Length: 78
Image: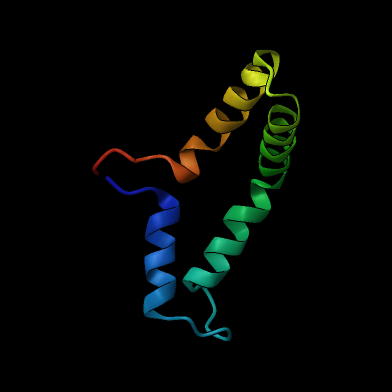
């Protein structure tokens, strides 16, 4: 199964033009812009974990990954 991110990346490879409206590049930028807080939270959780190597931060890391699962995780077949 493929993720939404995988689908948009494939479309972007097929048509990488910058000027085409409504293209995969626009969709990708919108997708990542709308997820910017979740991406930042994931970064912070991963950074804390890597610095401390402690189990206490695993909950934060798990939560951050779950928030991004709709974008980067596998999707159900339609």
